[in-house]
Amino acid sequence: MNYFQVLGLVFGLAALLKPVYMHVIPWDENRFLAKAYDAKRPSWVLAVVVLGFALVAFTWYMHLTAGVRYSIVITLLFSLTAIKGLVLLLDYERFQKWVAGMLQRNRGREIVKVDIGVGVFGAAIVVLSWVLY
Image (cartoon, rainbow, N blue to C red):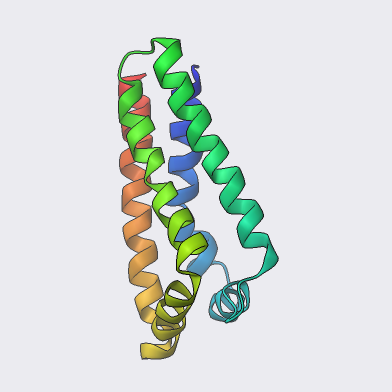
């Protein structure tokens, strides 16, 4: 397996299974999200964003140097994670208010819709990783 197949499968499976580990397994995911995205930006956000940016940069490095066919597909899809990182870094307050608003409306059902969308995106990444590599 090459780097892009492993990245695509791990990243895709994590996204594909998000609706399961967030909403099917019995626990209070809404309370977890409210605490994780507290009104004051938690200290873990900066560390996770920096680590995420480093992984995106490494992925671009691998794309530019490894010569793996179709590596641009996973590289671009994985680079989309940097958008959330930028939002968490530059406009955390608005992101936190958006999450808090979704948690309050209709007992958090909007979060479920977002996570189903993430699951569909993850399924597409898994299929692409399997087919392309």
